[in-house]
Image 1 (tube, rainbow, N blue to C red):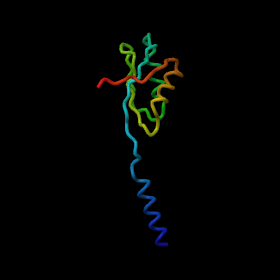
Image 2: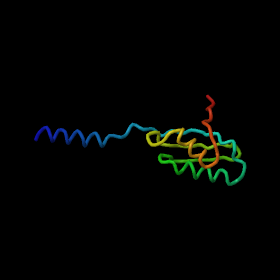
Image 3: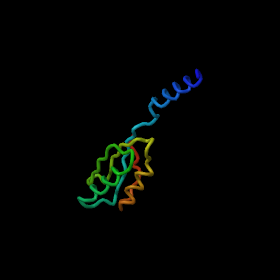
Image 4: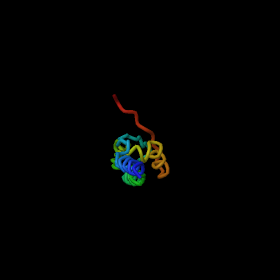
Length: 96
């Protein structure tokens, strides 16, 4: 019975610990956007990806800045979402 209580306590502690995930922000180049409705469509597609917390799309810059939980989604999933919406994208290299 004592071992069971220790196991139960350990399991409770383990489930209470935060998941080792981080919020990441990336910029996707979306060169095929050419009308005022394009950013709306791209934003809608990205917001539908589980784990995405914010999206800012710029027609002028032809890019999308996306913040997401890297434990729930990935850059390839974001690229797939824009591509499936008709707007292929690529990860934009950051200037350092």
